[in-house]
Length: 354
Image 1 (cartoon, rainbow, N blue to C red):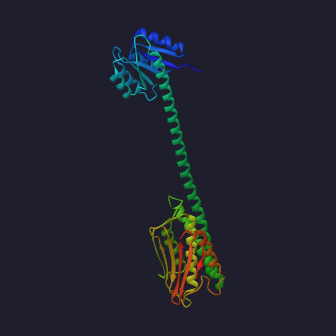
Image 2 (cartoon, rainbow, N blue to C red):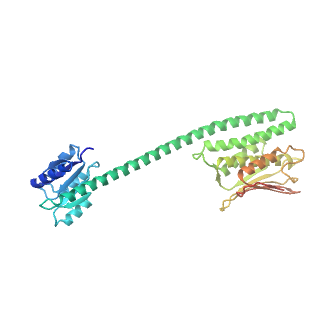
Image 3 (cartoon, one colour):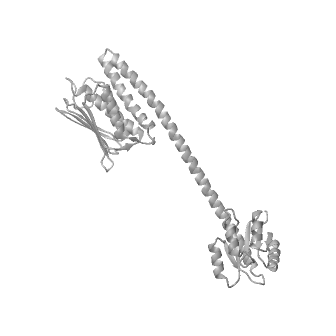
């Protein structure tokens, strides 16, 4: 192991020789300086592990020299050496940045204490360096994580952008095919498929236009979704939405959007056999955390989410999406309309109550 490199600064030549002899006997490599200025020049040359510094010296005293040493951010630790009646000076040295102090005596009995103080100062310096290195590693790791997270967010937005564009293209094809199909059943099936794809595409659009890809503003999403559905059906004000602001994760937003789409399609098909009437969508999110989605109409009423003559696919989709949400779906039907409530209660089982 390499020897500890000590710089001892003291104007007393006898003490310098005594320190050099004693510490070299214990395996140290000792450098000597008679003044503060000389000690600083030796320090600037490098290769010093620790400094022992006397207080009284001609010209620049120990406290001034200590201040100059501590001005260097990479300075080695300093042990201050004072006389027996200089407690106030020792305290000043500690406040100025000395690692420790030792009270010297003419006979040299303080040398054992000085060696202990030097070894303690080196141990403290080592611990401080290790702590700083660990903190630097933590900061670097955090910076790398933040950089990777930002890069991942950009990539996710790009993926959502591409997926959203593809889904918009698919929904447009479905709508075009529905418009040109002569068969009413085929036309209705294509229109339903269009709405379902649109519900998913709108979520991806929200994600790639948002700074946070982890959540979707459900109220804004439903406004856009309802507007698109209304536009595809030549809306003249029959479809409306009132929504409280609430954010949820994208998967749950898709489930809500698909449920809303299915319920609107169901109302469009079955609530008003003789024409078109109002369909109202509301989203209520009280401060307690529960969310209630409501889709209602003023039509002929229905005892089921699947009207007579339909395939029942819409009801199956609603039940599957409600299960994904952990929601309870309740249908209130009278002869003056149907009101469907979807409550996000956190219940593990999903049920449909007529």
